[in-house]
Amino acid sequence: NAGVTQTPKFRVLKTGQSMTLLCAQDMNHEYMYWYRQDPGMGLRLIHYSVGEGTTAKGEVPDGYNVSRLKKQNFLLGLESAAPSQTSVYFCASSYPRVEQFFGPGTRLTVL
Amino acid sequence: ELKVEQNPLFLSMQEGKNYTIYCNYSTTSDRLYWYRQDPGKSLESLFVLLSNGAVKQEGRLMASLDTKARLSTLHITAAVHDLSATYFCAVDALLTGGGNKLTFGTGTQLKVEL
Image (cartoon, rainbow over all chains, first blue to last red; front, side, top):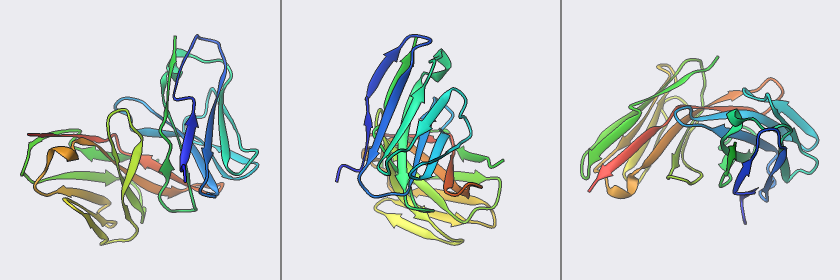
């Protein structure tokens, strides 16, 4: 099993550009999450999904959109990137109320 | 709002020494997780603590949970260089729309000197 995979691993954007980060999991998990990690701040939840076709906002959702059209995939979109969105993005998946399994991360720089 | 505080934030220790990392949280929760992160890598699950008084051990690491005190500890016994990493605690909370959210501490960066 590949577990949780993320595409791309690295990306550099200019302010105002858009992009989509892809997360895929092969563990048949119901729940999927997007976090961002910034120095000294731990991980913060951006959006999450409790099942195919459902999404909800986390604690820092502004500037991001998500979609979960298939159970195994969770997409994170940036419509108009800003320098404040420079971060490392982690996707995670889980069954309900058990440990979350994390992907390898995407390092995004917005110039 | 749930707050999770870890201390210390940085820990430099010599091989063979013992030390404890503390994780305090502000609201009731019966589930807490410890993760390890190596530089530039993802988070690896270390322990899942599901109830008051839970204690888990793996090698030189032992984690415990006191839900009444809202405190978890990660104890390191006879540290070795390979334990150098950043350790995060994360407290589980139910989300109103379903699902559960992890609120992470800021992490403890551990460096074990040879």
